[in-house]
Image: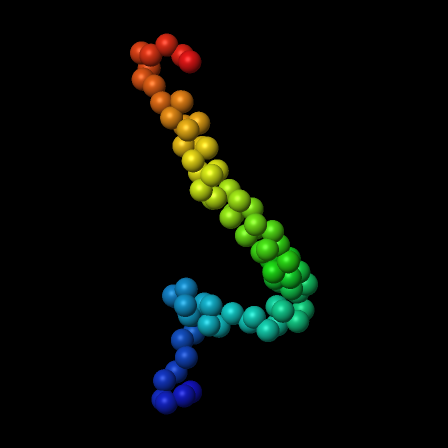
Amino acid sequence: MAGGVEPVRYPYSVAGKIKLFPFRFHWKNGRFVRYLSYALLATLPVIYKIHSGVHSPGNVRQWDQIRKKREHTHFDPPH
C-alpha cells in the first residue's frame, strides 16, 4: 500500500490491465514475445521501403489516372 491506497483486486480499465501485465515474465519465459519483437524490428525497414514506394507522387498520379478511367454511370457503355 503506497500512500494509504489499496491496489484494486481486478483492473477493469485497459490501462490498469496493461499496468499489471507481467511483461518481464513473458519476455524471459516466452519465446513468442521475443521473436515477435525481433521480427518486427527486422522487417520495419522493408515495410518502410514498400510504404514509401507505394505512396510516391508518381505512383499516386498513375493510380489516379487508372481510377478516372473507371468512372462511369450504370447507363454508360463499357470502355
